[in-house]
Amino acid sequence: MRTLVVGVGSTIRGDDGVGPAVAEAVACACGRGAEWMPFDGSALDLLGAFSGPPRYDRGVVIDCVADGRLREGEVARVLLPQVVAPPDGWLSSHHAGILETFALANHLGEALPPDLRFYGIGVTDATSFNDTLSASLTARLPAIIAEIVADLGAVSSGGIA
Image 1 (cartoon, rainbow, N blue to C red):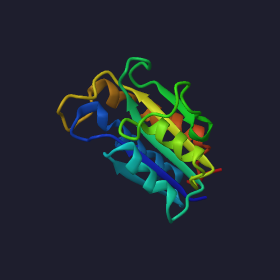
Image 2: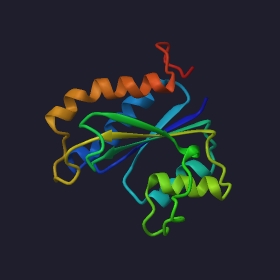
Image 3: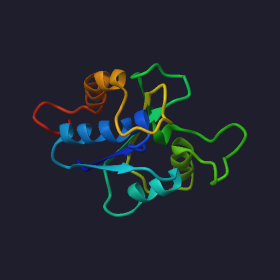
């Protein structure tokens, strides 16, 4: 199984860098066939990683959520193809987030991985200029990584089930 794990976030904005930190560890735990890439661009640009060659069987996007809906270190998963259009219609492409971008791509019939997941990780501050994660979030990294790897079905032999 070919898997692309994308860590969204800026590694110079403190806890915003949790996506890349977790993505690298998750891809390593998934073993052969898994690649990872850091990403710090617009959500629409992220589509290019998944929609063109090479084709992936599984896409994983990991990003921080700093809006207070998740406790620090809490992980929430969304299966992206299941995301539907917002009740008030599609957002402008100038303001689309990750979930809206993948929902729009799915709606337009874009060829995306059949298993496409978004993992949001709760953080309290994603705006401080700092090249390290906070001590409290760093302490939670092993549990966060283990939770995502378990959800993906990674097995101890280093492969995806």
